[in-house]
Image (cartoon, rainbow, N blue to C red; front, side, top):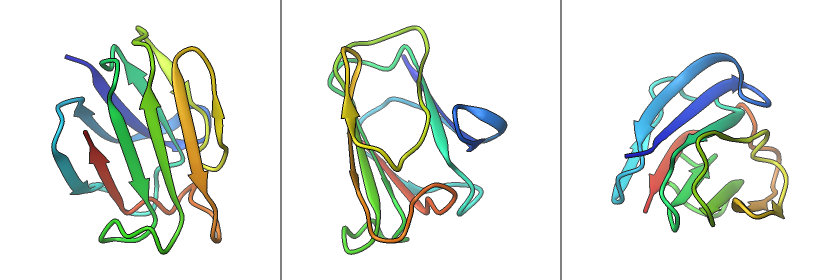
Length: 110
């Protein structure tokens, strides 16, 4: 089972804000609201979708970011939630309104 670790700083730096496994069907508020700026994916399963939202109810009317795991890795860092890109490990899609780093309120994992 993989782990998803949210960090206070960009690039997986500073303090850990919240740690979860990669089980599908999760929908929750982070323990420390409005702190997460990056995430490390540790052996997260291929096909996992991680959605992070500025809106506390997970609505797409505010900033959000969707991370799709293409290929599992022992450790992969998404340095910021405010950039869209893809590589061999992930597809990251960011919808900008007024910034998401340090403003994450809700997370969904499927």
